[in-house]
Amino acid sequence: METPSHALEINLKRDLVHHNTPAITLFPEYASLYSLIGSEVENLSKIQLDFESDYWEWSKWSIRRQLSHMASLIYRWLLVRWGETLFPNNEHGVDDVNGLAHSKFDRRMDEDRYWAYPIIMEKLKNGLGLVQAVLNTRDITFLRSRSIIYDQGPHWKVMLKAHPDGVTNTDDPSKGLMFLEASIRHIYYEEITHLYNIQRLKRAQGLDTIVTIPRIGYWVQDGWDISEPDQL
Image (spheres, rainbow, N blue to C red):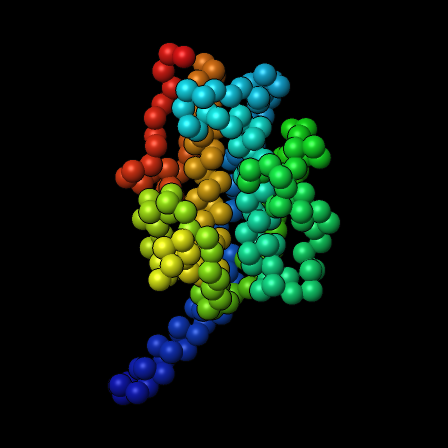
């Protein structure tokens, strides 16, 4: 019969094994994310990719610009916000961090360099590959023991609802504290939410949507703008 101390030792060993598990096990959805996005946007014409409207807030960025943001945000989080932790010697292999994450274009890649659809998709694919590389080379403990302070705008009031843990407010209402696990989750939630925007942009043009988007993340939270296209 196990003594209480022996049982505690076993539980501690199990916990240690669990937390030494590769972090990729927390986010298996990344393996199919690029395919999910790519299936929705393939074979679109330039007119369809570049359709924009001031009619809805979500339609002010075209599908092309949604994709550019979806790529840029990955590099901004992993290389700018988390760069010193994840790549202290800049061993990420990305040449143009400024153009991808720090461009003059609002939260998008440099449109003077990265405008062509194939190039945008390549950078998105590479970015998602970088996420998977991070998850494959770190364990769960690493993701749950590193944190950063980040800028927290008003939209985070809704976005925080989607996170079960790993993100907290600070004494400064414009700043939040986020652990690495939550940052990886945030990237996924952003990708899914902007994929939802892409589907709305397609519906606004009378186009059929292709994929079923997981009902998870920001777009399913109470208070999120889920307006749908009607007559323009």
